[in-house]
Image (cartoon, rainbow, N blue to C red; front, side, top):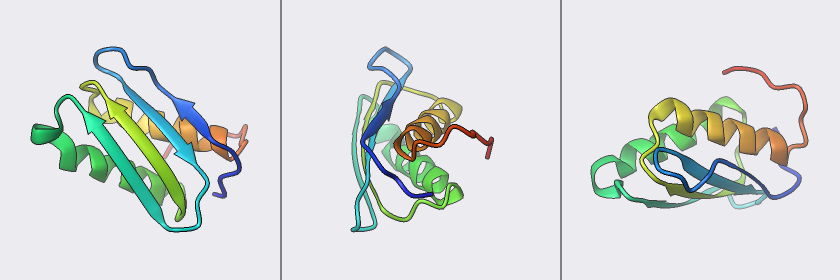
Length: 94
């Protein structure tokens, strides 16, 4: 999937994660802030990168601000931001 614009999904509310994704040409660049980074930082990064891989996104700049979101919420926020960035109206569950 080719990203076209900067897009976001999610909120900064408790138990959510805000994902901002931008087109890039330098591979995957991930910046993560989290209230639980010491316990779950690696898991959050893994979910984000796995979701991007499933969407065939090889180049993107991602800013993630986590407030304790569970894994399915993280995945859905990344998917939504990616589809918005690609201006893709045909969502598919992965």
